[in-house]
Amino acid sequence: MARSFSFLQSVGIKKEAIRYRQHRANEMAHYAQDCWDAEVETSYGWIEIAGHSDRSCFDLTRHADKTKVDLFASRMLKEPKTVEFVEVTVNKQIIGKTFKKEAKPISAFIESMTEEQKSGFAT
Image 1 (cartoon, rainbow, N blue to C red):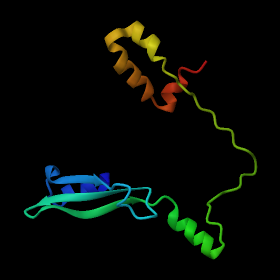
Image 2 (image 1 turned 90 degrees about the vertical axis):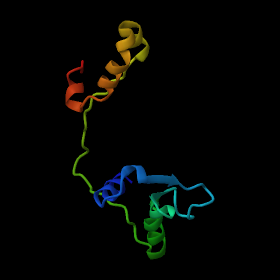
Image 3 (image 1 turned 120 degrees about the vertical axis):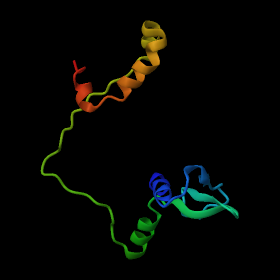
């Protein structure tokens, strides 16, 4: 949807004339998990110009069922792979009591840190 928004602007449609409308459950195709229409405001009113559907894995599942071919992508490893990462959990209650009005931006910064930055906190 973001790419279509960018494309529509690149072809000269003003952002104020672009909107997205989510389909209600009774409007979606049977295979769609979610669906949004890109609409553009014209002299005729709002017109749907593109549909964005989350089809999940409907097509692949149906194809696999009909052809009896497993369509899962996988790669066997010779040995198990161990992945280490640092999980930083923000205790907002303590940060709030300690930093008061600065707590929100501090929490947001901590949560947005990269893995490399987080690793500096590892004990």
